[in-house]
Amino acid sequence: MKLIRIPSFLILAIAMLFAGRTRTSSMPAPPPAPAPNFILVAHSGAGDISKAPPEFIESRRTGMVVAIKKGYAILAAGGTSLDAVEATIRSMEDSGLYDSGRGAYYTRDGIPEMDAAIMDGKTLAAGSVAALQHIANPIHLARLVMEKTPHVMLVGTGAERFAESQGIELVSPYYFYNERLWQQYQRAKEKADEDKKKSSAIPDDPMREHGTVGVVALDQHGNLAAGTSTGGTTYKMPGRVGDSPIIGAGTYANNESCAVSGTGIGEFFMRNIVAADICERVRYLHVPLEQAANDVVMKELVDQKGEGGVIALDHQGNVATPFNTTGMITGTVRPDGKIEMKGWSKTAEPEIVSATQ
Ligand code: ASP
Image (cartoon, rainbow, N blue to C red; front, side):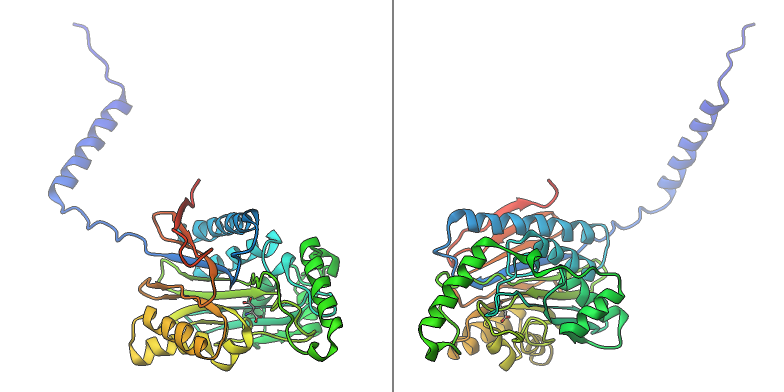
């Protein structure tokens, strides 16, 4: 009689299949894992870009999508909101397309000076830097201030010396050279020189453009973070510091309320502690995020002629992006990977772009 030999690996595979079947039929199926909940919102400055060439608006939108993809990848992989905020802002700083990092606007001295801040909503740890002239990525230095010093804010040469101690290479002001901004600076300077009496006022920027960048994010662990990076307002006085690096004015995050990054004429945001005011309304008055953000940006700031806008995000994933200017480009991404881009005008229809392609 001929014996049929069954290979032992086949016997093992059949046994495993039966064992698996028995287990699944006798045990209740585990509940489906909750869908990951995370969200990231970015802005690239509130202002009037209605007279800007379409290519300019398009380049800023594209730069934002590239940046948001970086933050999205971190959040989707279970990374922290702090890492996502920093990576997204770094990308915008490096692009040279915004008033931050490589594209920072010139001061009246013709040299960019940059401010940035980052805040962790879980611990309330915060780091900020101001009046930097030689740092390519101010948001990274702000993060190092938060994590490697006992302080919240470092400015000017002290901040740059700390950067060197952390292995960050100082760059020459030529690193920030930008022909378009240089021409804009020259025009503003000529105008100011023409009328010495007005030289302490902020000369009119023909495009009234702002390009500060900011990001707020909620990660899968339920933690909020906020960050902002800027070269400040056009033709600002050397040494002037705006709201962006002031915790509670232009940047704030608290897991108990919300995360906010602001943009606009910083002096108004500082006087009104805009970011903290929005979050404290949510925390103490229990008003919905949208109402809190609208009341501050569309009523209080408007009453004072304080131009600007904010991106705000609460721990439940609610988002508000009010602006009282004609535009503020924002991009918002959730776990489905669809980036909702809007805000290049008050009436712009949102556009959806994939974060995974
Ligand atoms: N808020 C920034 C500042 O005053 C400028 C801006 O958002 O465009 O420095």
